[in-house]
Image (cartoon, rainbow, N blue to C red):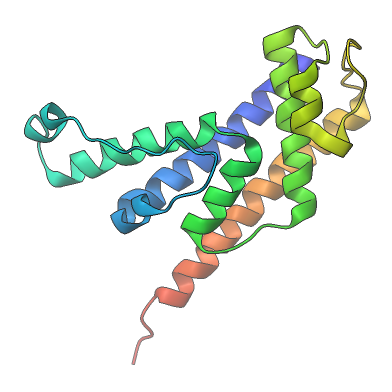
Length: 172
């Protein structure tokens, strides 16, 4: 069950990263958005510019690097950045669940499931154990995790679609 949990969290992250990349490429001005806790792209390699086939390729490359930086930041900083770039906020309840879920995934992948200070710090009051314990992934937790990933990605996609509809010119 833990391997499947790791997989669904990775798929959820990949979806959010893909959407973020598309937003940044569609509106490169959003690359200027700054959020504390994210190591933003600050410099561009001249060789990348000179060797690019088009300005679109340069923008896409910068956007890709920015997305990588965002997803190396804390989950809290990730959501603040996503919200700022996309122009809307997600439900705090879902963000908190997502943060704990990612902390659980990280502890499974990086510490053999043994709870450490990093997990406790990331998950805060939502922590599901104490220092040194092995984190469990019972069926109910797994089910809730799947629901959380679906809701976070679904709400994010719905908000994006809603924003796009607002900007679409009306036929006369």
